[in-house]
Length: 298
View 1 (spheres, one colour):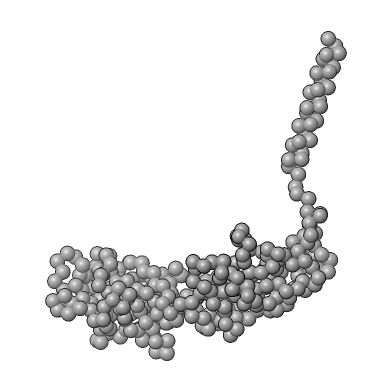
View 2 (cartoon, one colour):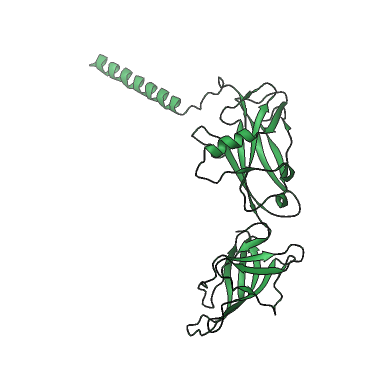
């Protein structure tokens, strides 16, 4: 009996030791010591189909360049005691590959050379893992109606291995013109023959004005009750950047025009639109006078 108890005790001890060993192995961190160090362009959501990774930025047109940054990373178990000089290049073939991998999307056009500046060499300092690459985009040289791509590749990294999956990236560049944004709307609207509360004053309405080319935004007029005014599809606010005068246009209604007695304009200092326009003819004439105050980006 005594021997049986000793034997059971030994089995229990062995189980505890085995369990402890299993738990320890389960919680161990991966061993990167045998991993080949690589230089890469890291992204938050890498593609899984073998095509080109991408980053994105949305620019609002302004007179001074817009700063943008991406990273070059040294992926290794430990840092390197010497500098790593990385050579970058803009590669049109990479953008072509990206566009082919997204056949249902409108193909991106390469960012023109006059619309950005980027260093062609960057250094990961000794004992550091990554460095920022600064890009300056000249937003006024880009058309808001076009989607752009900046295809960047790593050409050399002081002899270090360049990552196969993260050695290139396409930076998607969307552009919004300087009038694009979220606005607060107030004003007065008139609908001849109205008996249903569509005519009258309104205020405190929110309007999203989206870019339509370099100097226009899409707009939708409302009635006094907040409902949308019909018959004026494709309504746009068009700004002459030299004078800040505004012309109202509708693709769906050729009768729509500025009220000649009103100063249709844009005030760049306060980012405010003052617009008044008419459409239709009696007995179904319509008109609206709106003040649109910029609130924020969309």
